Length: 244
Image (tube, rainbow, N blue to C red):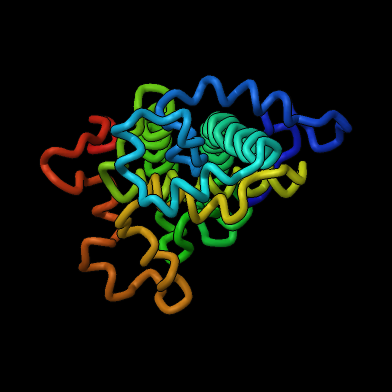
């Protein structure tokens, strides 16, 4: 994923300002995921009796043994992660529109051109020649729908394109983390992927990317790009525009 200058919301890599407080404020907006889902262990004294029943006595004892300083740091790190996800979801859509503008200026979509984009370059490279303007418009609609779950209540993506949008979002979050050296929970990406992409099929597309080209055996399977916008099940919702 290519980083474009000035695309990190109000944040700029050339500024010396610490963005931690901005992200902590953004964490309050991410109401669709609880801090507990993002890895924060509550103190047993703050749990209801029913909640305590969900943990083994050994786990409860370990939670209770954590010092106040450790708990405060853990809470701050988790809030920072929540704010990062919220902020990155906005950046993701902004950069997708930039990519769409880039595509409108191309006569032919080539893998080399896609490799220079901000978000589309994070998609499985073996299908890069298919990432044209129409595809990108559909992907923007799906990405906007997926990230809206951060506010309305998280729902797992209903199609492969939605899972890939989450992957692109986390790539953007990683860039912001690296630029600003954020103090995030250890192995935060694996934790978030487990929550947002449980049992996801899309990981196979990246695992096989180096082994297949555009004429791979995947072309006739459910992972082919022709099926990315199809609902996984009849009960999964995909925006009408993306299904067209």
